Amino acid sequence: MTAVSIRNVWKAYDDQVVLENISFEVSPHSFVSLVGPSGCGKSTFLRMVLSQETPTRGSILVDGTPLASEPMPDRGVVFQKYSVYPHLTALENVALGLELERSPLLGRLFGARRRAALEEAAAGLEAVGLAPARDKYPSQLSGGMQQRLAIAQALIKKPRILLLDEPFGALDPGIRADIHDLMLDLWWNTKMTVFMVSHDLREAFYLGTRVIAFDRTRTRPEEQDAYGATITFDIPLDPADPIKKRIRAAEEAAAKGLDLPIPG
Amino acid sequence: MPRLVNRRPGRAARVILAALPFALALGAYAIGSHLRLSENPNDKLLPSFPALADGIVRFAFEPDRRTGEILLWVDTLASLGRLAIGLAVSTALGLAVGIGIGLLPYARASLASFLAVLSMIPPLSVLPILFIVFGLGELSKVMLIVFGVAPFLMRDVALRVGELPTEQIVKAQTLGASTWQIITRVVLPQTWPRLIDAVRLSLGAAWLFLIAAEAIAAESGLGYRIFLLRRYLAMDVILPYVAWITVLAFTFDWALRVLQTRAFPWFAGTGRGRP
Image (cartoon, rainbow over all chains, first blue to last red; front, top):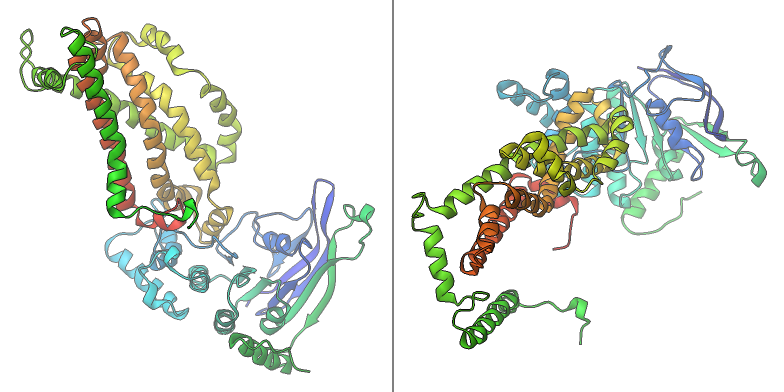
């Protein structure tokens, strides 16, 4: 159960301000959806939570402790693509996190210890429904399976925070609906705090316990560089909210190829 | 009528088309040789096929009268030894420096520009320097191959490593990898098949530098022999030697390609090239 506080975070590249004055508190076991137009800095924000980039000003605290200055196993990540390693089979991709931890010198296990790691990894694959694909290389898997694999690979380290950067953006609607349910199950069972960047508002509302929108409030051309995006909406959602059911129905319809609008 | 880009030869047509240029080249040689020899039976420029066969037998199967050794094998072993050492050293340097430059910002900051300048020095222009510094022995020949091939391999490996998606490197860190583990588990395994491509491309240059060095100072070697025989216009041996060098070079290229597909089955799936 991990709380995150974002305190007055700014991000600027040279003179161009991308994000300004971002502050919010995330309670433990939240599922935060980050939405906004392209270029509003939501992915930049995610990279700062990952420590892939550092805020120009302000700080990000996890359970009251400032973030490490580089990516660490306490925060897992799934990118839109390139999250899994093409030279490892599905099983080896998941076992990698275990091997790195248990073999500091080579990052590779042998014999009985390797078999033990592979067995644990197989359980992780099973949890995302990829058991039959354990010996396939990622290029032999569909887009949806690759993202499931990326999720299993990240979860093997039992991260306290999971960061998702448009992880389902490239998937078909039907596959997307399945993987959404998987994601909700995993989130619920692991008690992780999840941050997800998404282009898809329906997805953001369906999965999130909170939807945060970033946008620029000043849009005159001469103000573009000096003012960054900030939080424009912050909508808490009850997981039992009926809107979730309505979105679910719409998703199922979309999966069947009927393009129904979201009812009332 | 389909467009030319969409028309593909069938199985038999492919074999015939592939064999055609070889047959044409051989035929052209046979005609040229016949014309010259019928004009002057002592012409040495384009020896007849029986004369070539005789040259092959003398150098590849009969011991030399002076040394008692079979010269083709002596020359082949000497050349391949130099080539193997030169390529091994170049490959090791290419991997170490290339991965450093491609992955570590500090190595890139200190080495990238130096390497860019170094690789622009024409290797043959430093051959005299190599002879002066390392003497006329084996070392200077190996050094010429290293000097000619290693900078290319370093730059190519650096580029290939730099092309690995940042996401992979970041993901490895979230899985707890140290810099060393990122190299051993993420970068190095994905560099091997790309390195094979680079070595294949540099094989031609390696042979060039080998033969150049042997031509100038050596007591054996394929390059030494053809330049020695040039004095006697011994085309009946020079031509088979050139063909033999070509066969060797082609075989290495083919072996590396097979190694790449056998040892790295995942590599074909990363979307390189058209079928």
